[in-house]
Image (cartoon, rainbow, N blue to C red; front, side, top):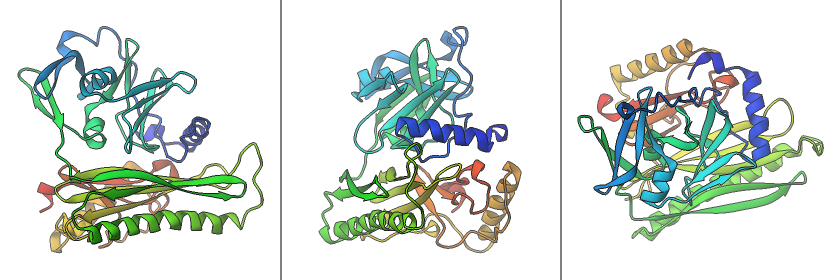
Length: 357
């Protein structure tokens, strides 16, 4: 992220805007989208041939600033993903079920992308000739699509990822707290051959959602009734990062606003082995022993200091560190305010598995 955009004022303004859209709860970097793309930039040399299951699609992608973008309409027409546009809130929605993508058009230079209300990171979207383009990186990470790039032919061949043979549904827990509806969506899985393992995983996920509601109730007792102009808010949802090779990695997040300049978001990730229901740790994916542990500690501290906002106190990555799994990597992260200022969001460290054996 570009540090010049990391100012509290912009984050607070974004939080207010998201609240008006019903998508509050996430720290958003104002640099999520690049500058608008001119017609001259959209030339044949930037175009990418798109294929789905070997069939060439009629629409083409673009490579801009080193990023491959795919038009949302190509995903709709070629891959069958539902695409809608809410003109009132200037928001596109792509896909359905869990991990539904939202692209919010703040203005022509800022198109922020969220997945189930969770900020999907940089780069943001692009609006080119009135059409939304989405980074393929985001499509691959969250929408079950994989791609093979042929640089000589400038072709991106897309296929469906082979995912675990399970079904994931979103279920809501609801409760009235301080006059507002607290709603926490959590995942429920089905389809595992081992029903005992399935029940244990679902128990863990539901208990986490119940804990969010209980925590919100406890916190709300300490505050007076909220003003109608800025009502309290308690909500939660989840994102599926990885659902392959008998591993399921999910991040649940909850947001609360109980007055003040901004609300607070908390993340909790769960990475399960679907073979035995074991909750896996970061050390199950990367080598955290000996020199590797010191190397990891040095990497984390150096990056936090370099990117700014470091508050101090970091003494090393614990064995039970927060993380999630994505394709070929584990992503270590820390909570808001844990080691860095709020404006810097959740510090994340992508650890390529092949580099941390």
